[in-house]
Length: 86
Image (cartoon, rainbow, N blue to C red):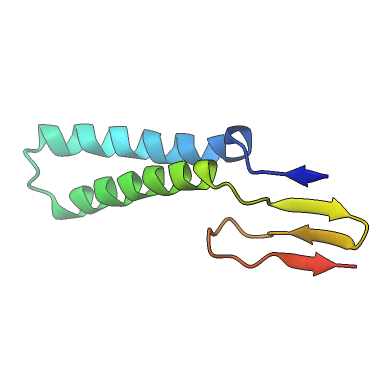
């Protein structure tokens, strides 16, 4: 059995980043971008949205169960190495 990470598994993170992005973007727009830390939050939320999109489009398997054992990624990092359990 092989499983990939789907949008349903990551939709909560995606929703948080989108909500943060839209709220801080609105505040920044109405303050004429005078508050620098709000601009930083907008940038970080945008980077979070891009990272969630990369996680969803990742083609590698996150869980593989076969006759040799179980291989899985336990962290939501694209560069995380899979762990093997016999």
